[in-house]
Length: 574
Image 1 (spheres, helix red, strand yellow):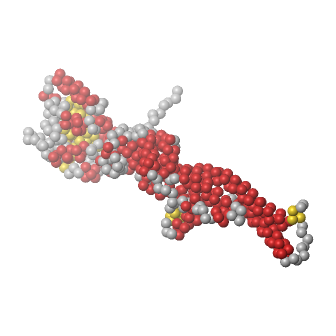
Image 2: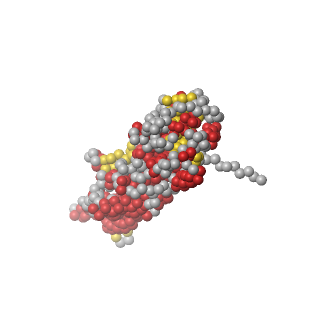
Image 3: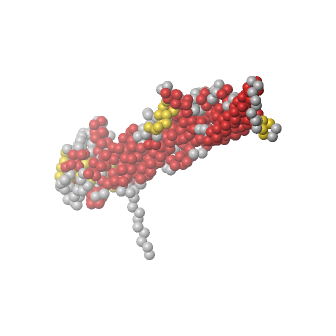
């Protein structure tokens, strides 16, 4: 038979570290009150843990007239607290100590100056019992003191009386918000000596019902009379058990972490910092949405963004200019030398758009250039300037804005309000730099479209060779014409069949040059189309990378931040 080991949860230290991480990740996304509350819980837990863990601080808290001080005196075995009809009687907290050696730093941290040694018998060594002011006191300072110590003590003993145990102030202000602290909470129905036995049972049942409604299931409810001693042995026994376990302080801190994490989970959007965050609805944590939202970005929204940026950057115009520019330069490089010089009077389409190498270098010389960052953010060796591609129209700019907004909406889908606003803001955070970044990407990518194919050099050499043959034939014929004009004897004239070689060189060179130029033009037309297609793909890839860097990556970073936030909260709440 196999023995099943109970799986232990994460340690208090790991939960505190997770809470701090969640608070740091929520900075600027969630209300400062929730974030600072989580940080203060972590700081308070660290301080309490470093103090005495051999002492358990229990506080008697209750409303005016509930008999806290009488119960305090009865447990301590001495008249330590004043009891009277004048309200409020207790103005400051005081402590009764059972074996209080080493408890000084803890009481200093609690800021409880009044300290007494308890004289009552019983194995309560390590107990520090506090008598708090009334939580409903007419004096604000008393209520603030109660609120302060309720956040610090290890064990809360709420003392109620038969007349006010259902007081809304107690349940709504303390018990219900402290539902996660039910393991360190005890409720004492005091003054039961004033009620018949049947009424005591009815009060206890009603008290249990109210506590269950508050989320305080399982909290011990004891019927006690400080005047007659009824129920005091049971209360002492309960305190003895809690003190002997030496776990109330850690259970209290664990409950504080759970409560702080729950506040972060259900917190509404930050009122400042993120544009539009105040208009976002409150949301409940949606764990795991970070990776799902990031996966959606690679689909339709990302492609639509690349398409909108490409249209706004004038990619179709640049691609057309690449094809025309390739043909233009091919004609200049491989055309018939007799007529190719005329082509130079036509403007180069790429140079007109300032996306060719010489135009970009000229822009840099004129001071309009920008240095491109290399890997790791180091300055690169390539420098590009602003292109002369026509600016995006109002419609194209609106399409880009819509695409950016769609990316944010797709990524924020399903996220709670505060984080959805943060994701949308991340999508727009660098949109003002998109135009310049896309323009640089177009300039950098299009510059590669001006590379000269190697066959241009071979054809150019062949053209000059046939041109030289044509010139040689012309000169030869010129010499023959001159000799005939001067009536000089004609030298022997070689022929190719019946045609003299000078004529063959002249006419053949001219025809060959024109034919080579036509063939080169056809090849340049086909090459221009291929280069245009390659440039189109390269431009879309470069512009897509700009979209990644300036829109998608910030969104992914925010989604990753949210994913880490949910993981940290899950650990803190476990």
